[in-house]
Image (cartoon, rainbow, N blue to C red):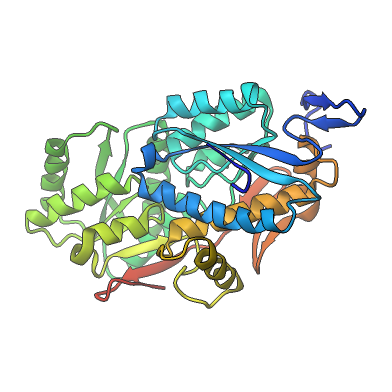
Length: 383
């Protein structure tokens, strides 16, 4: 779907140009009236609640940009394709968006496998990829000169969760993770943090995307017998919900903890089973008006999505779209892919109402914000 609202570079990078009739040379995806941005995101035909929430936040911000005349007189047009949470589809989407739809840049994937598939294509075709919302370590290490994450990565979330386990006397932990190359990288980071913090990594819980209920039940049985003081995930909120339910059905009180991705939806679906559950968050609370960013988000979201609940997903979409627009402004009145990247470096950091996402050659850190939130008995996240 297409929404109208919605020198540090190596010399071998060559940006495609479009020659207009008037003689002005413009970059691919740029016309006098618009900048075309491509997006492959996990929506699963509207069934992925987290992906849909992210899109609600993105569109809420871009509608306000549209109403104010766009960026340097050009409207931001977002062409969005659904990757169905499949890396192969995300790769095909990225190729279509760049080679057929001729977008200026790619933006805003949300899952680790699809985000890495998009990264593979942009590295091959030399196109910037701004604001992937996955916490995958591969988006930052080794350094990816064309990839600009905004949110903090899962490794930083693992640290705060494991530090909490240690601070409360915990010793033994388990990890629920994808049985994939990205999942293995998360596992290595998790093990290193356990070693650093003096915790025992006691249970690895890998899963394939087609894991069955029977296999999840077997994992629940392993958790029951492992005497763990904490289990941590790195996404896949729907599968994690099933694992938690099956473990609780066996009578186990093992504490489950979760990263930011899909946390609003996970807690809501678990209901009373989520009470007392600890979550790492890479954003301020979307329900509180304690920061300039959340006040702006709430006001815009109420205008454009009346009756829709606030969530971490929609706040992340809003914030990441805001960062994209700031980067596009920094590209100047005649944006090219090179000026887009150089503008980000020149700024040094993108200011998101007091939160600063930092970028410099060799280090696209983005935000460092990671906080802890507990899900309370009145069904709220308390930071």
